[in-house]
Image 1: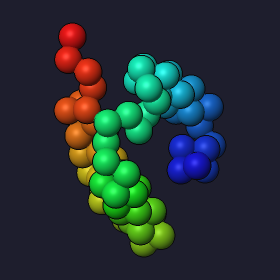
Image 2 (image 1 turned 180 degrees about the vertical axis):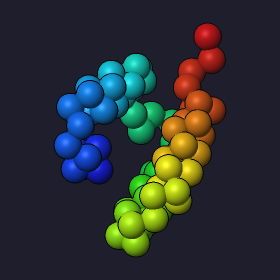
Image 3 (image 1 turned 90 degrees about the horizontal axis):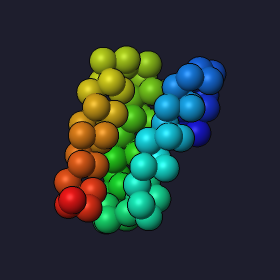
Length: 72
């Protein structure tokens, strides 16, 4: 929903491609409670219009997903 609100077709396309790269979906392996907490943080930062905090949170969230990818 956040990416859709950005009104950037390119960003949305890239995110959908990223989500499809996860064999079992984007939430595969990440504990639900951790995922919910991590999605709450950028929403709060967006409400406060804190661009730097939103960028940092999403950056950490995406890089943190790497540990849940299956090992090749």
